[in-house]
Image (cartoon, rainbow, N blue to C red; front, top):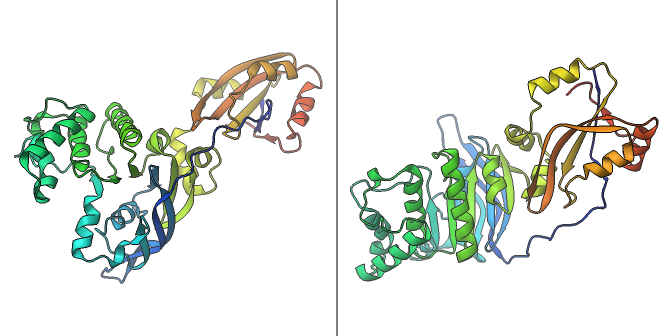
Length: 364
């Protein structure tokens, strides 16, 4: 069986990618807790949540089912009242707002739902008109804005179509357009892609990113899928049992997960060694060493296999792996089968400053 050594190489000088832009604060949660009454006593859905979200940011909130994601996002427009703590939007504690002020707040906050929430008996145009009709806006203004937003979301010409004639992705685009009708500054997305197929999910996430860039909206997105976070978010908070267990830039959470919860959420995205490769390594005579190289985003550069081969001498073969870029940073895992020149492997590991840390994994 081949010896497997796992390490995080420093073959190339580190190149720091551009930092995320500094943003003015849009939302702050201070010690937010939420408890529900149940037959067996109070159930804590949220416990001591502290978060800061910047203007124009796409902020992801992820966790398993029951982690408190939906409760948390609903505190941002006071659909849920907090049991303790404060929610501030643009510096205003929304918990002290009266009914009239709360109506004004909610007009600045759009919401997109998992199951679209469209009225089947109303056309696309009439579904979009609902928020503005409730606000007393005239029909001509409503129709003009609706057509502009339908063009923005890629549904130009669908004004008089009924929801039953639309695909799931089209229904969600209508939901997005409806959420934008009151020209909000904040968009809340409650599992907005969970009911969609993978291809449609990709198109909706691309649309949200386009809307964020075009309109400058702050977007708060909850999901249980790390792939969604990876594609569109700037920063992410990981929830477990009503608490934030980890938060930070997406690249760092993906490349250097600090908690078991985050590692479990990332597991479905991990590159798995194909069975034929694993079998070949298990039956190998031991002439080769397998280097498992992990790139965690600390450098902007992709791995330079030629530089590795030059330092090792002998032969270097790529067995398996993948490298992707998250927020301009190279991340991924490579398996290299190497037959280094005599003494060169130890030299290579020492040059990386990792010779004493190299982990012999036994098999992949």
